[in-house]
Length: 173
Image 1 (cartoon, rainbow, N blue to C red):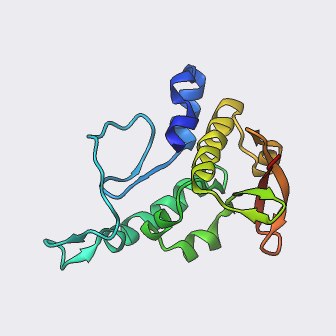
Image 2 (cartoon, rainbow, N blue to C red):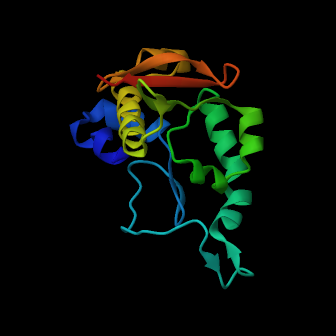
Image 3 (cartoon, rainbow, N blue to C red):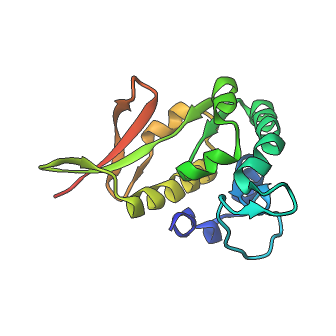
């Protein structure tokens, strides 16, 4: 769903160049990828155990290999990360180390009705893909500029978690 709303097929050459420089794609099989990296289609979960590597999980295999590389790549870019992957992808890294060294923008998306706010996974995936598209097509390099993001009625509502997390809300009719 996220890739569908990324709408990569609409990107022009400058969008593709920007994405290939700034967008990281996480993979349990390949680690970190850029959009133009060539891979074989696959489906794999991070808790798979590697028999030839002391039966460790893929998460544990990648963590020491990717963490510093990821931090260095973000730091050499602009030191800011718009984290739009699922929660489980954080397990590919020592996330505490990443969070100490880079500024992270990790939006939450909720639907609001008379009973309150609720996360609906399909909408979260849609919005993550759409936000990645917004970043790429608008060449966003300042995380504060993401507060203007709106999609399918979702828009920035407030900061939550003591000002650490931007919350985007869709008010249900």
